Image 1 (cartoon, rainbow, N blue to C red):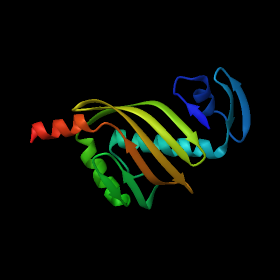
Image 2: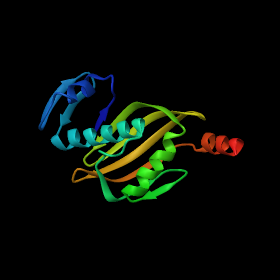
Image 3: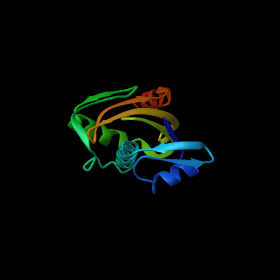
Amino acid sequence: MCIWKRDSPCYRQSTITAGLQSVARGCGVIRFSAMREHVIQIVEKYIDAVRSNDASELPLHPDVVCEFPTNTYRGAASFRQGLDQFALIMKSIDVIRLVVDGEHCVAIVNIDTVFGLIPFAEHIHVSNGEIVSIRGYCDPRPMLIGANTSA
């Protein structure tokens, strides 16, 4: 398992390291692999797509399943439609950390919304170059309370 934090030497080194090798850095010996690099690229593409509300280039499996505290989306078309709705409340996303293990990545992010800052974790499964599932975890109360007061 490798822990990625944007401001760490290991994260910065990962962008210029290819193939399987060991690199000694301040956070220990890290094994970089082509699979981890590929998973990180896809996860970053996913986060950028959410930030910009543009999932057109996102490598989603046609039968992707995305489960979040307030909604579940089955299929790429359903997820893209849900992204349009999410864009209405989202202001920005700050990536705190990406934790990668094989085909799996957990993204720890802070999402600034019209309801306030929401700490969020997403388990993203990438297989054969496509996102096959996303499971999001957060406390949905700020969104639910905000939705009830604006209705």
